[in-house]
Image 1 (spheres, one colour):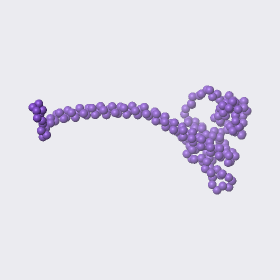
Image 2 (cartoon, rainbow, N blue to C red; image 1 turned 180 degrees about the horizontal axis):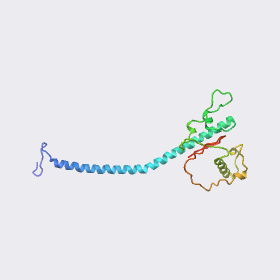
Image 3 (cartoon, rainbow, N blue to C red; image 1 turned 135 degrees about the horizontal axis):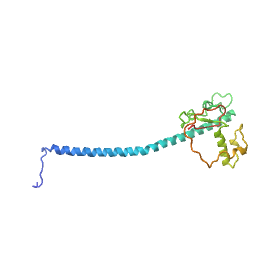
Image 4 (cartoon, one colour; image 1 turned 90 degrees about the vertical axis):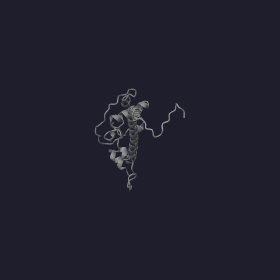
Length: 198
């Protein structure tokens, strides 16, 4: 052992003031580090929240499209078997007899698909042959097809002359979405499709 090196025996007591000062300094650093972590987490959450909300909306839109396609297929099956379009969503949910005198009905639409995931009420807007939405759809198809509406898009009880179909909808112009939901009640009679009320 050299003279410059002092060795403290293990039973020697340390100064309690030195230990307390060291711990107080550590607490200050811990608090600063904790505040920094909280600030970073808050920043991450504020930037991630809109993305999560947008992703949730996109998922609901995809689900709405998938369910709408299921309804369209069910309408096609119902119309082919009954030779007339359905007049209510319940007819699609209940199913149809695949042939006269069948013991069981053929299920053509899931109950979940009969609900619109985008609207608050969950109810689809039924599109009837004389609805504006159907007229605009026919006009858009005709415009895309050089002014001629293919036969599969003509509803048998509604065949307007070609001149009145073209030029109703200008696909080059776009309108802003009106916002809100369509709360107008569904009318009576045959329907050809569904659109979201949202």
